[in-house]
Image 1: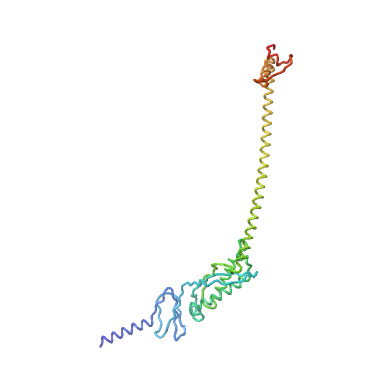
Image 2: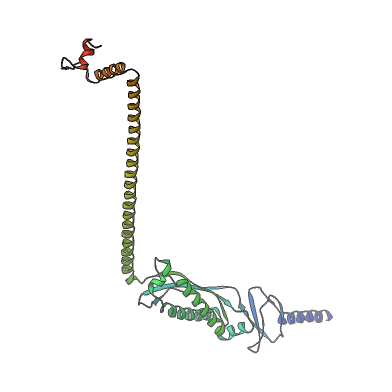
Length: 293
C-alpha cells in the first residue's frame, strides 16, 4: 500500500510540475492568462512558472513574410500602374506590444489582412502624389521612387506598431508593371523616345566627325605648306651653293669651266637619234668639230 501511495505522490508531483512549469523557445513569446485574461508576458527563452489553473498563449516572434498579389494604383498624372510589393514583419517585443498584438490581432492571418490595408493605403497615397516619370524613367535624375518608398516604410512602421503591436522591418516593391490595356501605348512611347535619342546621338556623331575632318584638313594644309616652305628653302640654299661653286670654278680656270659646261650641255641635248642644226660660228660647234681653242 505504501508503494502505491508513493507512486501516486510522484505522479501528482510530476503533474503539478507539468502544470506549473513551461519552456519558452527562442522563436516564441508566451503570454500567461488567468481565466482568459492576460497577466504576464515572457519574451526571452528559458523556463517559466505559472499556477496550474493559469493558461498560456504562444506567439511566433520570428520574421514573417507577407507577399500579396500586385495591386493597381493611379499616379498623379492619371497613369495606371500595377505594383507588386512584399512586407517583412514580426510581433513587436517592446513592453506591452505582444499583448497589444494578441488583443487586437490574435493570429497571422488577421495580421496579414491588417498589413495589407496599411501598406495599400500608404502606397496609394504616395503614388497618387507622384508623376509617372518620377517612378519609371530612363533618366535617373527624375526618379523619386527610392525616397517615396522610404517615406512609405516609415509611415507603415509607425501605424503598425502604435495600433497593432506589429514591427514592420521592411516594405519593398518587387515589380512594377502596366495594365494590359496600357502596355502597347507605353511601349510605343518608349520606342519613340529611344528613336529620338538614337537620332540625337547620330547627329552629335556626325557633328563630331565633321569637326575632326575639318581639323585634319587644316592640319594637312599646314603640314604641306610647311613642307613646301622647307623645300623651297633647301632648293634656294642648293642653288646658292651651286652658283657659288660655279663662280669659284670659273674664277680658277675660265676656259676649263667653259669647256665642262659645254660638255654638260652636249650631254643634255645630244642623243642617239638627235639631229642638231647649229650656225657656223656657234660655240658648241667648235668643240664638236675640234676647232675650239
